Length: 215
Ligand code: C5P
Image (cartoon, rainbow, N blue to C red; front, side, top):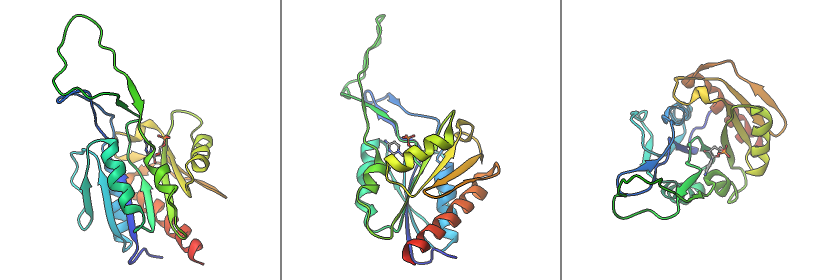
């Protein structure tokens, strides 16, 4: 089974939400899983685009990388490419909030507490899946500290996805991942392993779902 000639769009890495010109909110995502998925999809013959937040990692060869910083930039660069993709994977750790008003000047330090108002960021993979066209496959991730499978199934439904990869926080900054794949009609627990291996399994399951759609 291959993805030859199919386009795969992946969001990856963290986003940065600026408070002022020098400070930001972010998270510990390395971007490794997004690149591992990109490499696996490319090996399966796909044309791969990764919309990627700030990462120190080198992208795998043969893929297109669109660099972004904030969640709003990631949303814009992702949504404009959804139409042309057969598979859309949300592997990014999008910051859930952004600062309501980004200060133009550096915020001065003083002795009093600093109050920030944070507003929710849009859900990129949910907005992407809302534009679903026949035959497309949408995949998300769910990083949970408890009841991961159950919550992943909730996300599958609420975000309109075809598969969710449930995993724990230990995967964030490590090269290995313990994942459970949750689809509409089945659940598959994968043995803990290197992200590259888990990514190949995820891509194989996506290829199956894609072929079912076309059958
Ligand atoms: O709801 P939760 O953040 O746990 O969902 C995680 C999934 O949703 C991941 O696939 C992530 O890339 C995606 N997501 C997104 N935009 C957000 C938040 C999460 O695309 N603002």
